[in-house]
Length: 170
Image (cartoon, rainbow, N blue to C red; front, side, top):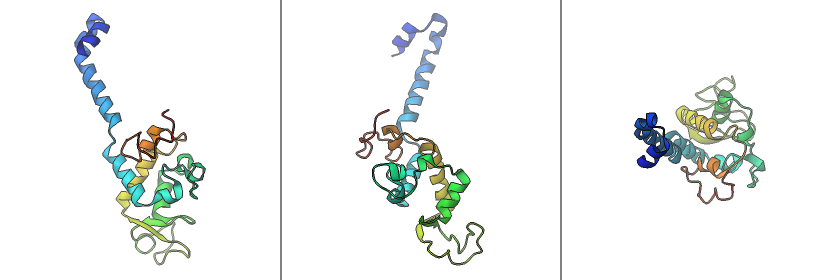
């Protein structure tokens, strides 16, 4: 490979061939392997059973699985509202923050019992919710076309995961 680069680089740039190869290898590894944040975020997504309402890849009701929750790929929530929604629930969505309503105020409601009809969900820490929100904003929100690469974020970076093969490669 080094000879191939030297053959195609002008004489003055051949000295940079080893550095270019190292940079290319680092970029390949960075894109080919999921980050720890991606793995953690996907794990929290599964642990929270988010797929039940939002679908396997957060595509919501229009994604072929008929989930009842909204499409998170097209959400207009910002990070703070997403964090609060996951933590405190909304409508039929359960609250997921450990101690929500009883120990941590939600939506400005005084501490006490959750509002009528609100159910407890995954029992996540604030840190886990932060990881999930970052995962969603890095791999989901704004990524409106689900491809194998977009799906792979939920499956350890594996574009050939069984659940991802239904999506186009690009």
